[in-house]
Image 1 (cartoon, rainbow, N blue to C red):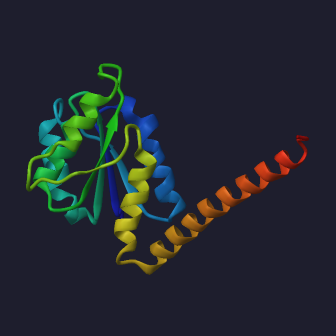
Image 2: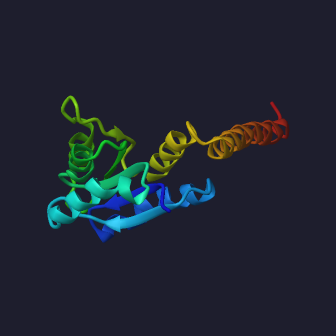
Length: 168
């Protein structure tokens, strides 16, 4: 049963939103992936948000470009946490319209918002939310964080080695 619902406003958002799916796979978290437009299929969006919990969803990641109403409208219809991914789309104003549409939610309807095209971070945040009550997922996140740390240390070691061959 899927634990994370990944929704997006159109198929053109898939290349960005796929990053969330890939990181969830890395952490062994089941997910579902759907196209649900707040503007073109509002009834489908309402049905999706209202029934997500019944389907076993614990967190929803919603990506949208342009006016980007999908994350906020979804959050208004469910008590589940919603993570918004602003997407720089072809009709976007450098992504600012999407960022502000998702970020500037009214009091009472929070949407956690990641960076423009930041679906990978949305997947990590969803995993952390699930990991707060699932020790197996939490252990995978801790291992991932350790791998990030080791990569930085290795980069510094590589830099030090390359500098040692340069004469003053």
